[in-house]
Image 1: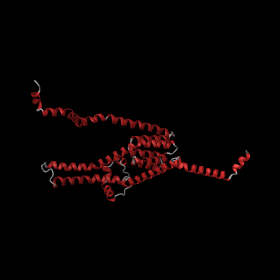
Image 2: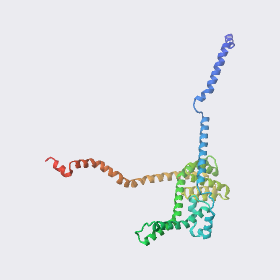
Image 3: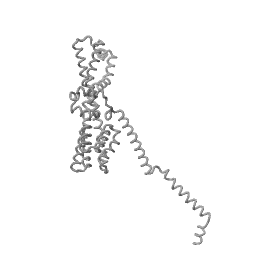
Image 4: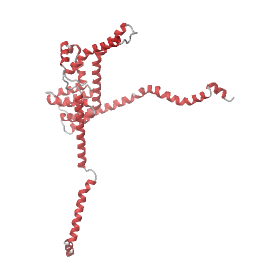
Length: 337
């Protein structure tokens, strides 16, 4: 038996067959993973590349939006500033509410305030001149009395005086709406980052990179808050600035929670978890409120558009039949006696 095994192992043809089998098995073992689909490493690499591509795309969108926006860095117009300073328009037309509205609308610094005051001074004269040309130059409202035509011009000047305020209010409301819609998701992301061990600054920076696809305004505010946390002496001031710039109650609640957490040493993650739950409940309540308000809103469209068509479908054939028989009198005459 031993001699047979030894002779078999020393046989050249057997050794060649054995080596060929080992080579084929090794080749199949090395080639098989490429046909078995993506491994975990390749999948993670693909996800990382896709995420980096999305991040670069979002950064380019933020850079493009920042170039279009005129809120952060605008070259000051010396002419407007000189007129505002010479006429002391800040004292006459601006107050704390005006400054707060400009911040909420995304206008920061002195130059947006100068532009706002300059247009409040100039637009009434422009609107008044345009109304004069429209009423008297083009002969519109010629059939009206002279006091009425002059009153139209004064009304146009009044509209020009309040046009900048309407623009700023509209801009502020749109910006608040954008921040308010994206804030629950941002708060959830912040909670995940803090629970994973990140600091507040790192969490805000990470959230600003991820939330930009939903709200560029919120991403901008978070980036600015991160910078203020690094440079301001009191961190409380950075959180107060965030709440005052956004004007959203949910953001104010989170800012106060962060201030109290740093003052008393309470866990930030616990406060964010409670606020995130409250934010979800508030969003659900708002959705239920909108759903409950739909039936009264749909009543008028149904009366105007749905019910007439329904009556036409129901009564139309009967009306056509009555008309074909000559009306009600024809139907009565053709009825069997």
